[in-house]
Length: 328
Image 1 (tube, rainbow, N blue to C red):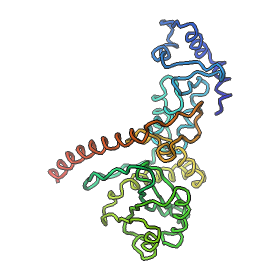
Image 2: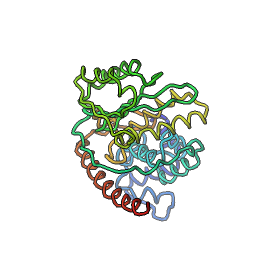
Image 3: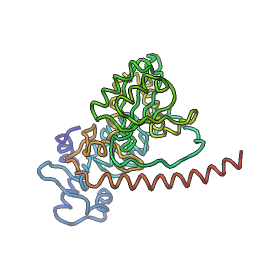
Image 4: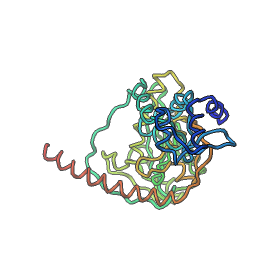
C-alpha cells in the first residue's frame, strides 16, 4: 500500500473530505455522526497538503476503502490481537481500528491453532542488560514437520530482537557457522545462555565459546523457564509454522515475513519496537507510513518499563504460586 494510493483514496473519501474541511475552517458539525470519532481527537489531526493525506499525530489516517487491506497488512505473520494492534498503532489510524483488528483475528482460521502453555514452576528476577547485543539466549525449535530441519534461535536479551537460522541438525558442526554469520552482523556478544542439550553439552561448543571470549551460562536442567526470553519466542514460531501449513504457504518465506513484523512490533514489556532498541531506528515494514519518528530516550524508557514489569510479574507470580502450592 503506497502513499499515492492513500492520497487518491483520501481524495475520494467523502468523510475524510469533510474532516479536511473542518480542519481548515476550525468548525465541526456536532450533529454529524460521521465526524464524531474525528472530532473527539481533532487536536491530534492535521492535513498534509503536500502529500494529500490526513495525519493523527504522525500516524496515517486510512480512508474507508483501504481500511480492510491496511488491517490485513498488520496481521501478516499471524501475530495475535494485541501485537497486531500495537504494530498498526505505530503507523496508522482509523475509527474503531482496535475493534476491527480483534474481529479479524478472531475470525482468522489459522490463528485458532494457537495453544496455551502451562504455568512455570518458579520465578526469579534476572538482571537487566544495559545495552543491546551484550547477552544473547540460544535454543532450537524443531524438528520442523515434513522437513526434519531445525530452527536455531538467537535472541538479544536486551532488545528481544530475534535471529533465526535453518539448520539440518542440532550438532555443533552445522550450527557454529550459522552463529558466525549472526555474529558477523551484530558483533560477538559477551554472554550466551543455553540449555544443556546438544550441541551445548559438547566439547566443540565449549571450545568455540572460549575462543571467542564469550561467557557461557547454562540453565538448570529440566527447567526451560530459566531461558525464558527464548522460550517465549517458541510459541509464535510454532504458530507461524502451523498457519503456513494450513494456508498451504512456503514456511521459509512466511518465517521471514513473520520476523519482519515481529521485529517492528513494540514489545509488550518495554513498549518499544525491537528493531529500535537494537538499531536505534525503525525498519520499513508492510504497513504504510509517512515519516520515521526519531528515537529519543528509547533505551531509558525501555529499561524503566522492563524493571517495572519484572516487579509486577514477580509479585503476581509469587502470590499465585502460594495458591497453587496450597491447592496441591
